[in-house]
Each structure stands twice: as C-alpha cells, then as structure tokens.
Amino acid sequence: MRLRTILIAAAASSVLATPALAHRMWLLPSTSNLATTKEYVTVDAAVSNDLFYPDHVAMDPAQISVWAPDGSKGEIENAAKGRYRGTFDVAVNKPGTWRIGTERVSIAGTFKLGADQWRVGGRRPAGATNAVATPAEIPANATDIKLAENTARNYVYVTAGAPTKIALTGKGLEFDPVTHPSELVADEEARFRFLIDGKPAAGVKVTVVPGGKKYRSAEEAQELTTGADGMVAVKWPVAGWHWLSASAEDAKPEDKRASTRRMSFTTTLEVVAP
Amino acid sequence: MTRSKILPALPLLAAGTIATPALAASVTITIPQIKVAEYHRPYVAGWLEPAAGGAARTLFVWYDVKKRGNEPGTKWLADLRTWWRKGGRSLKLPADGVSGATRGPGRYTVAIPANLPSGQYVLKVEAARETGGRELVSVPFTVGGKGSGSGKTELGSITIR
Image (tube, rainbow over all chains, first blue to last red):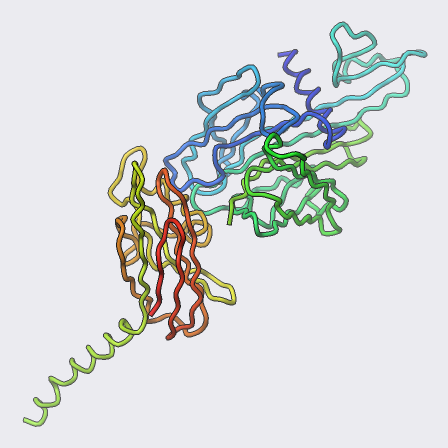
C-alpha cells in the first residue's frame, strides 16, 4: 500500500512538473463507442513515456472508479496488474457516456528545520533522510513551509448508443468538451473547453500526443493553450488514439496548508478515420 | 346511375397519386462480389444529409437482424462508424421500413421517401464487412434529379433516378 502510494505520487508529480517530457499515465479503452448495452469495454492502464506502449510501470486497477451515465457507480471486473500494465473490464450496461478513471489528490513540498531542507510527500528515494510522507508529520518548529496541492484526474469516456453530456463537479480543472469525446473524426476539428472551479479557464496548457510513436519518426505532440473562453481547438494529425493532458496552477488550494494548487486532467481520445 | 359511374373512378385517381412519387426517386446500390476465402455479407447503411447541413435521415440499414444472445447482430452496427455518428446510434432497431437483413452481392433498389422536402442532398452509403474493409460513398443530388457514384472496394455503383 505504502509502496504503491509512493509510486503513484512519483508518477503524478513527474507528469505535473513537465508534461512534455516525463512519464505519462494513460488509460486505453478497447473502444470509445459501443452499439449495445450488452457489451464490455476492456481497459489497459499504465505509466510510460511512449503512448500506448506499456514498458515502465503498471497502474493498479484498484485506483479506478467507474461512473455510469446516470451518475451511479459502476464496477470493474477481471482486474489484473501485470509487470507493465494494469487491465480491467467494465460492463457498459446502460446507454449513454460512461466515465472511467482516477482522481488523486496529494500534497507535496518542502520545509526547513533549522538550516536543513526537508521534503514532504512526493518522490522519495529509498533510505531518504530529511523527508516526511504527509503534512501531518511536519514538526511544530518547522519554518519556510511550502506545500502544493496536486490534483490529477485521468478519465476516459465510453459511450453505449448515443452520447450524453459529461457531468461536471464545479471543482478544480475539468474537461467540458464541446465536441463529444465519442464522436471525434480525423478530418474534423474538435473543440474542448476547460473549466477551473466551474468557470472557463484561460491559459490552460494542453498537450495532445497521438499514440504509436514507434511507427513514425517524431512524437508529433501539439502544445496548445486555452483562450479566454477556456477553449482549445484540436486538429488531428492522424486517426487513432490520442493522449490529451491539460495542466494549470493557481493559489486556491482546498487544503489550506498548501499555498498553491496544481491541477491536471488527462484523457485518451479515439479519433476515427473519416 | 350517373353517381355509380363517377364513384369507381375515385379510387383509381387516388392510386395514381400514390404511385407517381415512388417512381420518381429511388436509389440502386450494388454490393460487389468479393473473392476472399472468408466472406461475410456486409453491413450497409444509406442515409440522406441536407447539402447545407442538418439532421441525417436513414433510408436503410442492413445488418444481422436474426443474431441474438451474447453477441447480437446489433453489436457491429457501430462499425458503420459514420452512419453510427450521424444518426444510427439514436435509431431504435429494428425500424419499420428501414432495417433489414444483410444482402449478398447484387443490385438492390430502395425508394427515396416521397415526403422528402425539395432541395439539395447528399446520399451517403456506408458498408462494413466482417474481416473485410469499410467504405463510404457520397452521391450529391437534387430532389427530382439524378445522381451517381461508385465505391472502389466494398461498394459498387450507386445510382439515383
């Protein structure tokens, strides 16, 4: 449990710090569209540099939550964690758009104890000294406490029948697509809105990377920024599965011990050929 | 006596008005013969889109209507991916006068609805075959006019007359 938490935190913090370079956490459903409500979607979950090539760390299916279109909680089945890849199935047994994924909230940062710099949470090498796991362990005489609240969301969308609107919570960084994620086509520009605390968020950095780098020479990642209306327009270089990750930072953490809030939203989008 | 002469004429007139629009517009779809070791009859859908944009209207969809159980024939309707997105996904199947069984190679004629408002349209026909390919053919036409197009792989000639 402990090891897993650290691993996840490490993966999360690296994704947040440098989205263009670091390991990417990804969920890859077998399809984004199902014709009936008698079918399953099977999902791969991993952390790796290249998409969607599992060669680094498996994601534990135990972290996954499933929401049916009516907001009720769904179940994962046949979960397994392999060396490089977690995998699970979801019975998509109600019509509409399902949301499958994780939301992880962690606090990480630094403080001083006398002249020594200490670390809180985040990536800690084995046997690290001058480090504590949680803010609760910060000694009372600590100074220069700098903590950041990290919220990392990673959801994929699977639709049975006609798509339905994706529910929003009004909290943190959220994906409010104008073009529904279950109806993306390679020759049509997609428009996605990002919200922070329910309001259109300008200046959100959005990275879009097509899968299958092995089969081309360049990553062909797009680095986009949302406009004043919180919108980005995405042109697809190819059909196929694409990884999209958005990140933003502000000074409105929910946990008041933190001074900054880092938010990320990641999804995997299926773009079909016209 | 005069009355009885007039009355029989009325049903004839009525029949005439019904028959005329059906003759006016129809689409003929060719499903080509494909020489492969494992051949399955394709799923095919045809629909009309107003040229200026607007809701699509499905004319026909041919799929495995009989297959039931864990993997009913409806499972693969989403493989007609463009039709699925343009309206297939919100169509309740089976649909009277629209859905039917898959067809083997040959030529099939489907009526274009007589109540289609005049204007310019694009007829789209999409075919997807198990272990085979998928093709989408667009045929622009004006109501009352003719049109033709042709597929290269999964569909043959498509004519509107």
